[in-house]
Image 1 (spheres, rainbow, N blue to C red):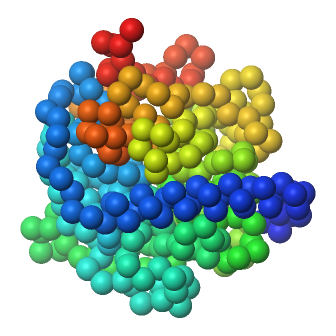
Image 2: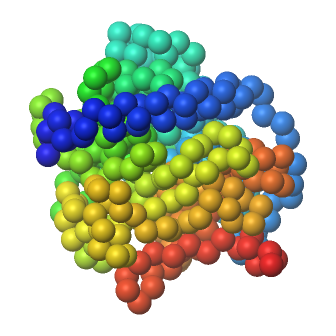
Length: 357
């Protein structure tokens, strides 16, 4: 379905209620992003091995998929200019450079209220000989948003080839569109096609196809597909395993530390364009979604922004937690063992639960 058709099918009352929920959630997000812009305090807890804790003890919200460049792993997250962390072993992480030192020129015309270079929920992929980073530019509580693209041949700042190039925006939304162009997640399909899921609140999660050579939308008016809907939904992530596509989404509220209610839901499909059904066969477009990670996981509260990673000969599930009680309730990057059960569904192990009765 196109965006106009999806919007037309939603009753006005539901849209108004969803908009109110979105405004409340984004007001909380505004406070959280202001806090995120302040200088970070030193790590308050020891860095534990992956086998003992999901938390990496670093303050990060809305992390991208983790990617490898040379002998290092990289992750990008919400903040000024799209900041980053780097690691050689996935256990200990240190700060890396931000993507942008100055705001791309197009942002002032498309999202004029975004003036402080606070860009959200990036995602990154290596495609061919370059890295493609998608990021959200928005204004709190509004559908005036855009997903931008920046590219670089390498993530290593010591490499002479290191240079981020602004590629403009990929998709944008305005007030009245009925959906929101934030929280991008990019999938390079096994057939070579490239896809982008995105969306937050309002009419839910959307999917568009990208052109692999440019990383941009295949056409300005290309088909917009609807994948999932719920009263509070965002932070989609799409991946493929064996013959199935898996759609992860967040339900609940973010940005309140230990009071956040984020939880991760999942469905799967034989086709990248859906329909995505949960374990009971309920369509995610109509409110379906099986629980993947609950809100509370021992000291870790509010998992969000799913990702998967193959590294060190194993499968891993990556996300943030909106609050780590051992870090004063701050958001943290998390990495967890991932396995696929006999029915083909993924399961993440939160090792922090082992000592919890």
